[in-house]
Length: 53
Image (cartoon, rainbow, N blue to C red; front, side, top):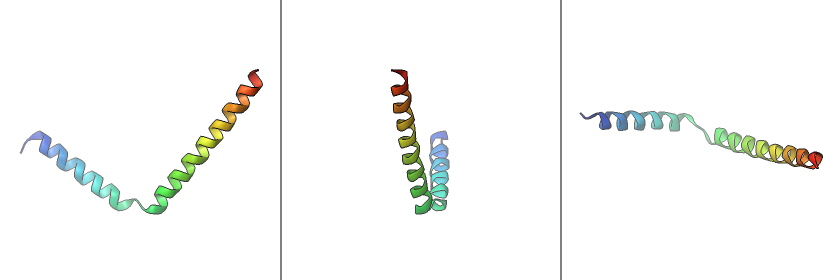
């Protein structure tokens, strides 16, 4: 067996085990948290930019 085949098999097994343990609720929670973080960062950036002027 070649080293590349072992790496591909290991990566495939890891991805399959992760995929099986992730739920739709986890994905939605991550997306919502990312959106809230992005909006908060944008608002703070705009407020700091206004105060700088």
